[in-house]
Length: 339
Image 1 (cartoon, rainbow, N blue to C red):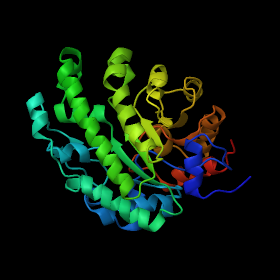
Image 2 (tube, one colour):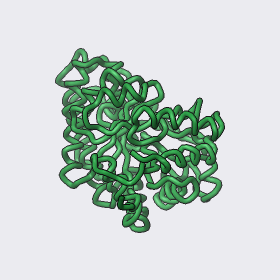
Image 3 (cartoon, one colour):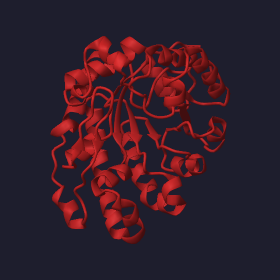
Image 4 (spheres, helix red, strand yellow):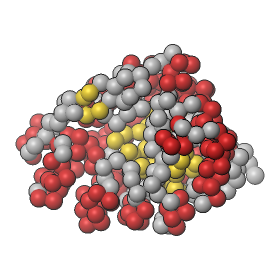
């Protein structure tokens, strides 16, 4: 069988084509303290500076061995872009959203007319350009962003879950706004060199809102982003936290190429609950990748591979204190796997 470049291999794996072996990639956040120490680019500065962001993303490849590079490392840049208050991160912890800016439809209107070159949105796109110029011919360049439902929750706050139940017009208006932003942001990342897109939408959970509201407030909006990416031949991975087993068919209905499932999902059940989507995951980032030995990680990886997983990786974002050797054990198992 033909041996592919990492870029070709991932593209083929995500779009259901034959491939020589499993790609060794991580679709969720990749930054760790050991990588920071090895490359000299540290959080929180690497969240705000394009050169440092690209340097730390590159370390996922040069230090750890992932066959892709991916930015950014957190899911707060989008909310910060719209004026939400952010609690700064540290070298070991990512920033978080602590203040919100939208209560009414009128508030949404005030946020329109934005410039995607500004704030950390512009930084992420600049980092992608740096990485694409250096690695774009050989490696996948992954762009990642928070999904529109979780961005709506960041912008509106804890009231968001009540809003979709009690004020459909407001809920749909905010979803239209966040989705249009996500489409534009994704397109800008692609223009700068991203060839794979990851949507991280942690609160868009079937468990949290149920099938009826997921179908109304999530599926059509994910589909809009995915359709825009497919127009430019960019495959899309969707990650939603929690036990998504019962919602996988609905998640797949938006046309996504791959679904990343977390450690609460049985891998074999996930594979059985989709028709075409590639299932990605799902080693526990805390109890396995951070706190176990490489030997144990290899054993768990084999169990996940035996369940029919499409891409081996963490079940959620990599913990910053995860040892490099533990990630390399997972990578070794992925690279040795033939479909």
